[in-house]
Length: 143
Image 1 (cartoon, rainbow, N blue to C red):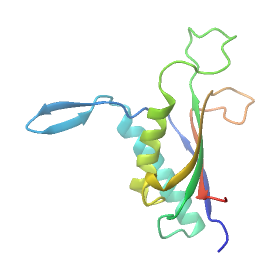
Image 2: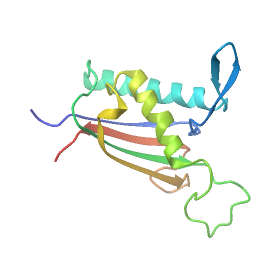
Image 3: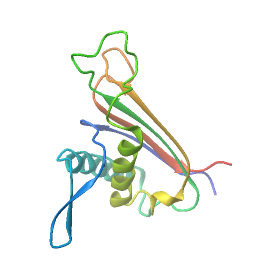
Image 4: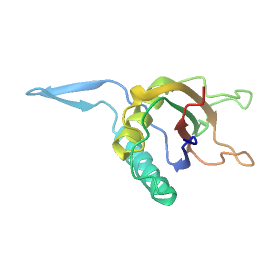
């Protein structure tokens, strides 16, 4: 069986999935209001990419993913700072994005990932990622 892949871009401000807070009666909510819009943007982009490629079932088996997040450069960040080595945490960005890919039905579960590459860069004109968002590539793992 040939490898299966799905690559797409998501525009928007990547948001980390961090801690939840208890609001009473056993109800927990995300501590950040930015997570839901980001997850919805990822889910919508994944569903659109799946439809274009005729993908009707979640990818199963061992999977690999490459996710590059392009973050807006803060005004206060010195031009000498090449990478966004501050918050948000890369692992929390990955968590929110992988959960959205599961919600979209692209992957059956993020526990299927055996290889994962995540990267944070600044969105900048005249680069591969001139806008905030993410470039996502998910597929079957090739030993």
